[in-house]
Image (cartoon, rainbow, N blue to C red; front, side):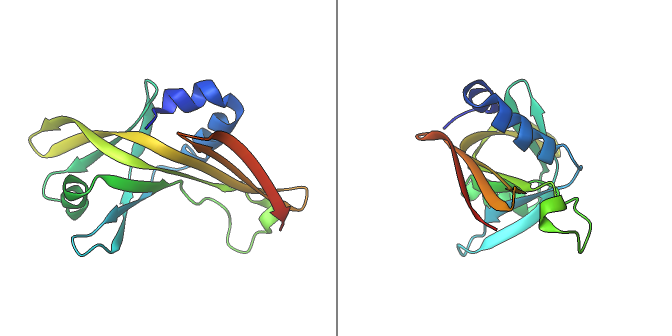
Length: 147
């Protein structure tokens, strides 16, 4: 597991691209695991603060129940591209995956940090699909293929 600070230190340009996608809008999409093992997606807010990715949840919410039962999650950046825009004109998207760790609990609210196992930035450049990834064990990698 890694912190956001680890990614920034290891691959600063990649981290800046991922951060830009996450800061492009307020609402991110959080994927959690339901009691029956199926996926659940929910809108959420997240912030990058002090080298950590921080999320908060209201007590009694189903996503909080999900992460208290199984803290593995995926977080997707906001989608800001205009409908019908050409792929080469789009900003791309970013994803983080890992485990949520509770850091604070107050009446009505629980705060978590994300221990990151994977970060991904996908975009089109020079007519190619570019997949930039960072994994806790393999660090930064960049792959391309025809779009």
